Image (tube, rainbow, N blue to C red; front, side, top):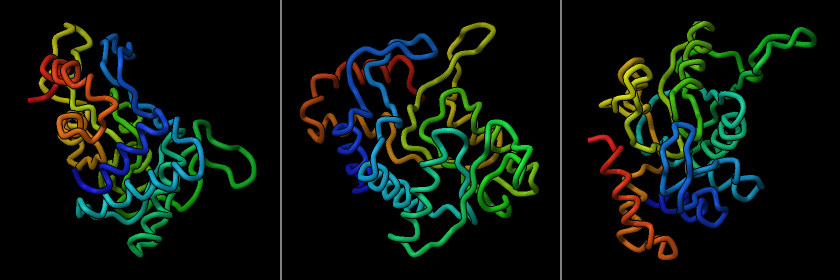
Length: 223
């Protein structure tokens, strides 16, 4: 596990952003873990999280010109990532985010921050169904820019279900986004990394959940 992954894991556990137990997901699945980026709700945690994003992005080698944060959770994530890229890596990149509804007065429009241009990196917490990412890509392309990739806090690495038949799909939401749009997804943490951390004792207080995590990956994980 790389330093930025361990830092994110320790932070997520300390702030209860990552919890283990039994959680009913929006999909109806009973998951042995749950991740909530909304629990990073103070300056210290956001600063550390931004550093983790920045380190993961730089380590990936992904090329981009600016950052975009989809409303709502992506807004603070984009801001702290842009700040951390400058502070830690000397990269001063602009960022923008969208409003859910266009503003009719003042400066108007639905985009706040720098005008979208060039290669745009999308920052979000997780991809569930991929809806927010598809909307972000549409916004970016409508502005004449191009999506460069997606940076996530967590890739759950699990297969979705066909909405018609209910059958398990062969791809995860991240893989689907990569295939459909030809862009890379960078994740600080993955389900595989969480399981490996439990195996290696990186989170001793959560070691008792290892078997449930492995069983969940066996049932729903991507190959």
